[in-house]
Length: 172
Image (cartoon, rainbow, N blue to C red; front, side, top):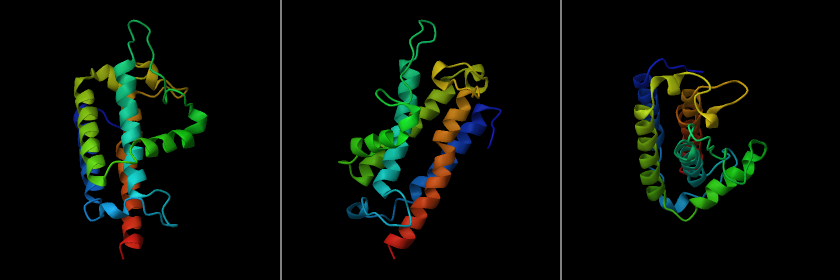
């Protein structure tokens, strides 16, 4: 896994991978956003909803956490636990199901911008040292940057490949 030693490197990785990812949706007509194909596990709509769901969750975790008062965010989401992520993904798909691809993209652009703003505001020790946020605590003692990487850079890369495969099959 990629590691980052400063905010600029993390921000550049998020922004460059996001730009490549989101550009893949330009050629997809809204009428096909829910078209399912056997070769890919998510439709374009689900692909974007997944990203929206996780970025919204991270922003909520950070907003709801108050380390000084002991207030903790519910992770991964209220009513869900780490053992049932499939149900959480379904809730992401349902939350954004009535939106057009264009509307999802506008909202995802906003969420990526908010994540980048959050990174800019966080002190380096919170971003790069383990155990700085209760919501980021795991047995592996991940720093916040790692949570951000696995919910931005990594899926932008992997899901870009999936959406490209979807387009090759569905649009040919």
